[in-house]
Length: 79
Image 1 (cartoon, helix red, strand yellow):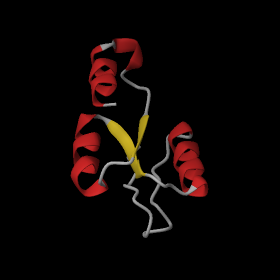
Image 2: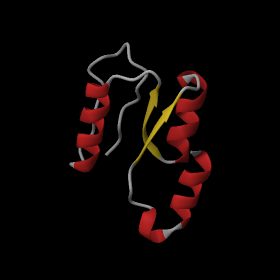
Image 3: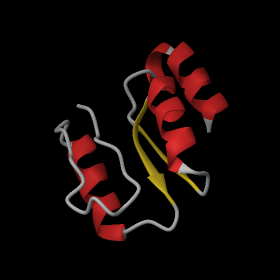
Image 4: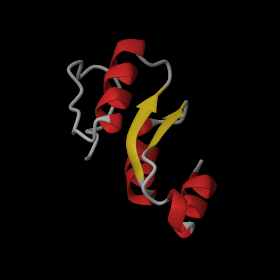
């Protein structure tokens, strides 16, 4: 995932594609690294399908998304 995001940042045609990272790794350690690398959102497995769907819809509409379910491992999606 991190390698792919780094590569996407180097390819002009791919730089504006929003990336949502889904991982089984601890969100506390990996979320800041994922967001710094360019991810627009970070989810820790298992994830809530409704929250993921809302986050992706917001990214496609170019709107920020804030997780309505704070118990889920989700970051704020930046527009």
